Every structure is written in C-alpha cells, then in structure tokens.
Image (cartoon, rainbow, N blue to C red; front, side, top):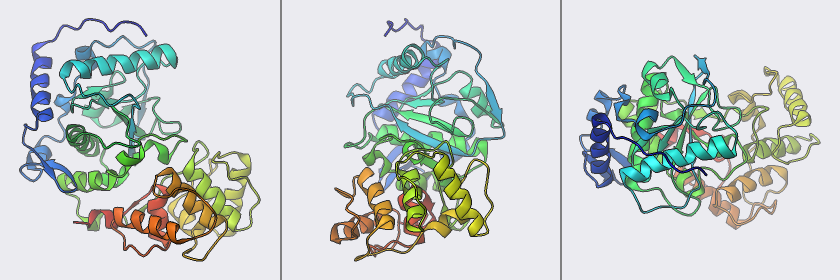
Length: 385
C-alpha cells in the first residue's frame, strides 16, 4: 500500500474537524437514547439542515488521489441506502487525523488491490463520527439529488443504492455512538435529497454473499430506521406495511438461498446454493407465471412474488421451508445451526427476530416475520417505543 500523502488542512476543513471532534466527545447537541441516537432537540436541528451536506469532508480535503478515469453518473435511479462495515480492526483512535487516514487507506486498497477507478463507496464514516466523501463527485450528486455517482460497493446496487462504509468490524461488536449518530445524520440527508424514507435502508448482505455489515451492526438497523424516520417526519402510517429486498439475478447469498429453498418447498428442483443462476431464474419465472404474477426479465422478486412464496411454518414443521428460515437465522447469529426441524431453538430464535423488528414474539413464521427475516422492513419497526 502506498504511503498516505500529506494533506494541507484548509480553514473549511478545520471547522469540520472541530465539529466532528465535538460529536466524537459527546458534544454537538447529541444525546444517546434508549434505542439509538437522536438530536437533543428531538431532531428539529437535524431536519432544518437535512439538505445541507456541508458536514461531509470532501475528497479534496482528505487528500484523495484523482480517479483512474472519469467517474460516471446514473440519473433518476437512486432508491435505497446500502450500509457496510470496512471489516478493519476496531481502532480506538477516534481522531480527525485517523478519519483522513482511513479515507486514504480505503482508496488505496480499492484502486491498487481491487483495480477500481476510485473508492468504491459513496461515503465513509469513521469510528469517531467523521463523515467523508468516498468516490469523487458523491457530495456534488448528493447536493443535487437528481443523480448519483456509479459506484462499486455492492454488486447489482451500484446504480441505485448509495453506499456508506462504516469503519470497523461488527460481527461481534456494536459500532460506537458517534458513528451511529453520523450514520443517522447522513441517512437523513440522503433520504431528503433523493426523496425516499427510512424504509429504504438496507445492509450489504441483503443483496450479496458477505458478512458485511456484521450481525451486531445489523441489529441496530431497526433503531436506526426509527430515528431516521422521526427526523424525516415520517409517521408509521406513511411506512409501507412491508418492504421486501428487491432480489434479482445479480443477487447472491442468504436471501437468494431463502428464495431457492421456498421454491424447493413448492416442488421445484434446484440447488439451494445462494447463487441466482439460470436454473433459479427459470424457476422464479415459472412460479410467477403459475401464480399469475408479472415476470421481469431479470427475475426481480416483487412484493407479490415474495408473499406468494412464503408459507406459515412453526414448531413441529420440517423441510426446505424450515431450512429457508434457519439458514438466515444462522447467518444473523440468532441460531447455532440449521437442522431442517423447527425445534425449540428455532422457535426461540424466531421470537428474538420478531422482537427486534417490533413484531409479536410468537416464534412462528407469518408473512411479516418472513419479510423481516429475509432482510426486508416491516411497519412494526417504526411503532416500537
């Protein structure tokens, strides 16, 4: 990895550094709440400045290298936020200088090791709560709100999702309060500028085969969404009853395996390997046609397809539908192993998942629980106190 370049700190950057340091120290009007982070005045200050991304430290301020070639943009396609963790060690250096070094480290890794034209993500948040621009022109795009920079943070989502890298490794640890506050703030800005709500905040593993953003970070998402919705002024009535992950032929991982196992439960012969290949695509299309549902060329599972696929399962059941639940609970560290039998451990794990998402903790799989387990978002998350 090449040495990090020296950076001349401008007055504008220094002012941002001062604000970030106050945030990391617990200042800046931030209070920790029981289920997340919110502004001390109930969010009104954040709401007043939601469309102003001036708190983001730009590529010019952290000493970014120029892109290897011109970055491209996509207009009118942005529909979601995809949250990541860097999987770097959890540093205890929360300083401004550490945040600048982080941004340069990621860019060097992405350009020199991955062969990408620039940093893959749109934005980066340090463990000290500093928000930095990732790929060049991302701040400009956010300020405009009508286009996004085409990125490289999640396969299949690089033209329609804003990628946020969060420094650290969160499989077994929870992010620091300063990072969570800044993530909330950035999600509010993105939602305001691109015109969507807190029900469009997802994790990387909802679309790709990865441990990112980490199981314990992912458990913070319902609280994060509630806080963002409050600041955006979204009432629970404005949240869709269920928002399913828009799985399609570019997707991989646990969500695809869930689809495959549910199709197997309906009698379709295909491997449950988490890869959305031609056999899975044909099975999805056949299922959709059989159910009288529209079949997109890329095999996108819309809400109607997801809900037609799900079946009620509970204690005493066995088979592929049970494995569909269990493999996801194992990935999210709610369950130790997938056995194919809906036993007491599975019932307890499902109840834990339900409680996390504001659902009645019955331990049985209904449609809303399938949605939450698949990586979707349910309205009940926003009504939990």
